[in-house]
Length: 446
Image (cartoon, rainbow, N blue to C red; front, side, top):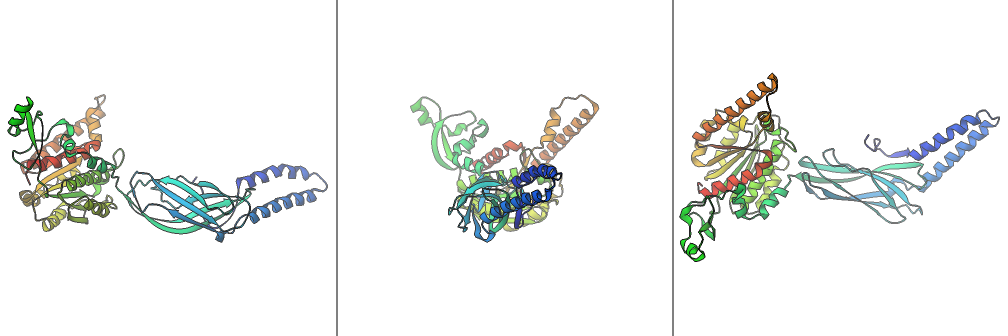
């Protein structure tokens, strides 16, 4: 049972009071056989009432209790943040007061309550706790519920203090910071494969040892002769390209994965790609949609633009509606006139089965480079790995193989029209999305 089921102002008996009454039941029953039982009954009740009055007298009035809260106005999803509560007591009593406190956090937050503390005479009491939000969004935190009692501990007074604040739970950016702190060279070697560059493309960066997969046309023969080992030139891609990131927020993106849902993982990958593109000097714009356009952040440059992107999409949730891809692409055509890399984070099965999109995507493909990125269905993968032990397993495994072949045919069909589609595991989505971004930029297709 959650503590503080009763949260209005008032008086409450404590467990100590109930235990005291329980211990007095037996003497009262035995005294019922005594001639002066009424005298004993009056004495016992008088003692209990007197102790209760003393206890209540030692407690401050509810209007003498005040509380304030210090908490951040922004926190990342799944990342702990610190909250500090300070209780002020204007009562001039000489005895310590014992407090139990509950803050008004919604169930989507970690709630380590009640907080316990002892306040000495004339000193404010500071209580600290750590919480974390599990669902992105904008939340209102208002009341602070307080119970307090004296050293006798027979009764407690309860009150609450209004202290309205707002906290925004934004996506977890720890992965974004990790990629930003990495060098572009490390990112280009994701998966152990050096990225290939077009000869003469971009600005000269450095000379390094030749690796398998490098362009032989970039071998620096002078450096090779001096070092007696094959050396190759490295070039940085040109900056200032247009990158447009589309985020599907429809029904299929709410499917739960091991740690979150498809939308959460896709948003994490999208923000990481945005951060890397902004770090490289490219212009990044973002659009989130389902059956309508939920957010559009115009192109911007520099890592400061990442904050505007986060502010624009942090509260978006998956909706129980079918995504209107045609509407999204038509809107995109009106706002994105320059050639750009368009990366759509969506569910592959849902998107590839929309044959009506091909006529709409044809002009987009002629003007832009289009890339669809989705998350692999772990259930299909698990069924493909199962051994056939009975007819039910055989039937389900056959259906999973059929679905996989059907998706492969659709991907090949879309690739013939120049539309690229890739599917990644949940844990690899971010790294593959970043790798594909660098691959497209380094190929010079923009």
